Length: 143
Image 1 (cartoon, one colour):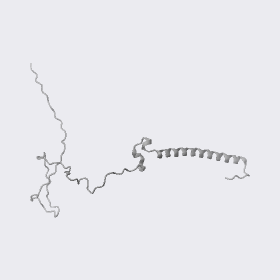
Image 2 (cartoon, helix red, strand yellow):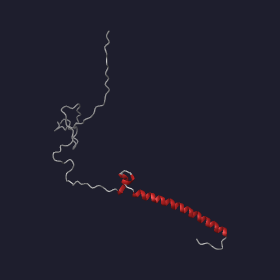
Image 3 (cartoon, rainbow, N blue to C red):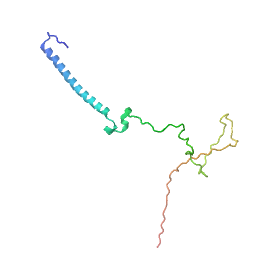
Image 4 (tube, rainbow, N blue to C red):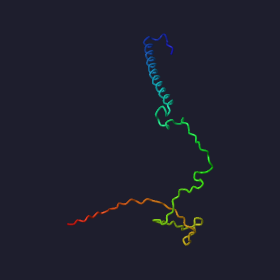
């Protein structure tokens, strides 16, 4: 800012003092910002091998691993000779829950008197609720 020579010396001294205070504040802010930039640059330069951080902290810069397997046209369940993982039927179930068909799904007519063509059986294996069993011990006393 250009100074007017005709101003009084007191006004010039005040203006210089304000400019010096502003300059000092700018130097402090500049020093703080330089330290922050240095910290952020160091953080970006670190990876999981240098910083003892787990790999997910690398974020998007982490390279994706490529699979060495070749693609197949089969699904995972389409293996020759694979029997599957369904539950086996038992000879005699502890409880049987019938699911009867009362109405035709197509026309809505009653099918109560009609015998089923077949019955599909599906096992459900449940663990029973634990029960407390009380045992009384009786000791004989003889004289």
